[in-house]
Image (tube, rainbow over all chains, first blue to last red; front, side, top):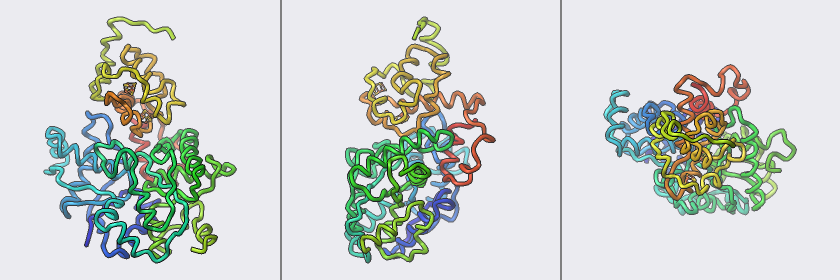
Length: 287
Length: 135
Ligand code: SF4
Ligand code: SF4
């Protein structure tokens, strides 16, 4: 099985480990993430104001190119997922905007693509049971906080990756890997996002709340699907004594954890780029 | 705070523009404050999302124009998801931001963005930051 895959700009650069760990995990699970032949940046923010049709052109171009390669596209970054999925819905449902966007990019796209997150691929196309059976190195007893943040989930009516009142897709994956998922109050709160540009204080406060909230419930690591969350959560722990949340917690992409559990070759995991080393913790637990 | 009310602010061009850009009807908000309650950044805003909407309902253009609130909104949509009336304060704050940017008024000067940020930050933060802050 080949699944058309949109990496997006961050996974092609600073979050390379997110990309390589996902591709390799797919191979170990018996399928291929096939990178789109042609793609561009999604714009990194869904245009919130409905009159801003211009902001839909870049993501629509991605969708057009993906549609040429099949009826489904998957992506890993929460923001890309949010932007592509929401744009696809607008193009599909809003005739007037569809026509404006199509005219502008000189294409004929109808919104017939199915945009799914890699977590959905793992849950719905592979199955967490099958993943559990493929685990070579169970991450037994590792207490992991599944951090959804904003973009995977909101707005609920557009995203629909999981139940609005208490999503579990992330925790279910962690369980399959042998981890002990930790439920924490801030799991769907914002990390500070793009305020990293110019408003570090706010980011430190927001990310600090996420970190301390997870730590207070016993989390030893935090797992994310967003490179910006990863950056903000790591950076907020840097420099300050014990970090903003009073923590020095490894922040991992879910695919890095998946790769570790599948016994993936370390070269593809990209762990060396993480600020706080998870390997120490694994060693202490004899994993 | 002294508020002056009159026909000129209740039906101002500014308020109409915000309604048009955001696609939201300001009168739909009944000021319950759920949005501000859920907003992670309201603590740092001059006016939280509920207050911004109230000030718009009352046409207080000058007060709103100098507020930092639109530039602090992270677009997390907690406000919208909690609003019992289906109002999106996020869209209204985005409209305020867009109004400045479309007039060529940047919030951040590109040359003042620290180099380490440009070098180390995820591309998505830079792209998103430029779209939200730079005209
Ligand atoms: S939650 Fe909705 S109705 Fe309540 S104050 Fe905010 S915008 Fe107005
Ligand atoms: S979208 Fe903006 S206004 Fe709404 S809760 Fe988030 S930060 Fe606050």
